Image (tube, rainbow, N blue to C red; front, side):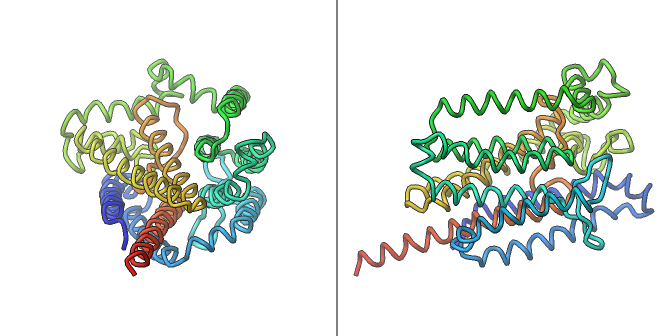
Length: 372
């Protein structure tokens, strides 16, 4: 017994993502590899791996995630340290561990494993989180350690996503509002300082405010993305007819795939992606809420955390492409090109589906027991 609506929307996003990666990457793949389908083929392989791995994850009882949450946290920290020592450097960032032909972006692994740990902590220290400032601070210290390792890569976007998700999970656990106010102020201050101290990040923020001031420099990505949105209008230029993807818009098949989609499929296509992603997010949050009502607290916190993560990452990606938020280098969940992101997000969704499945089975058994 699985959530049919959730699974359908996930596969729809997979399919749409494959089509858009094929379209958005064809020009660059032809220029770099002499094969316009190079990235599309790799994306299809990643999809196959994601489905196989998430299928295996689907067989793992959630109890095992709960029992091993501390071990998973240690694995995440070790991977984050390892990538700083022996990681592969791309575009000035050291975010990938090379395992033969596969590059693993360890920040994606860290997200899932940290949220598993946090869900377990909120179960073990539930009363302490609600009543004692120490219970609120302890997981933030762990987050601080992970955030420092991520900043060293550097990867501020992942830190922001994890911070927002952490705040959401702590809120669900019943932490007090004044603690959130203090955390929000501290987090915003820390992000502001990191931006000010980094000329690269500062240029991103200032170009977000007025990208047309330097359209061929710091504002180049955003102006090209905005032109793609503008050309798309209501119904788009037609699949494959994007001009901006032809060496104008950088990262067209990764960070800015929604801009190419907007140009080719228009407002209608963007709305379809938003609706599909919103359904996935709301189903994850609903499954988390149902688990909390059934007093399956680890499952409830974990599913809710995954829902918040998917929601915020999707909002940041689309907001950055549309000029509503500074660019952060985050993928559009289940749509953008990127093996690590696709595999880890697929695993996360498989966890949500497993949580829902176990809940349905438990409720069915409870009803059967009452009838007897």
